[in-house]
Image (cartoon, rainbow, N blue to C red; front, side, top):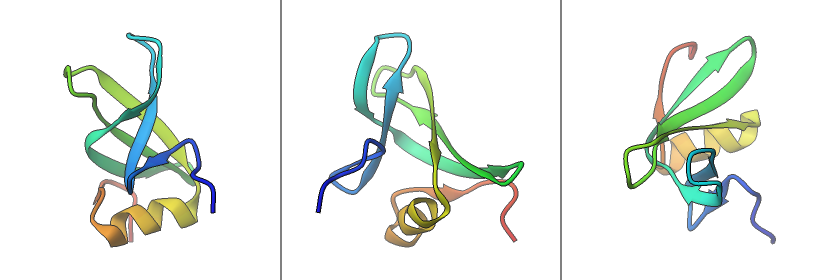
Length: 75
């Protein structure tokens, strides 16, 4: 099974705009639901803000595994 661009070793990764680096691990991600989209927000190891859009299945999987916390918009 191949890894998607939003997961690495079970955690959520994203593109860092500030450092222009791909697959940067997100620290303490929170997944919010806004307009039907699952958006993970967090920070990288240097404290830069990051965000990644996830599908419903991946978002629920990360919450179930304890990789992320539920934010706003969840029932």
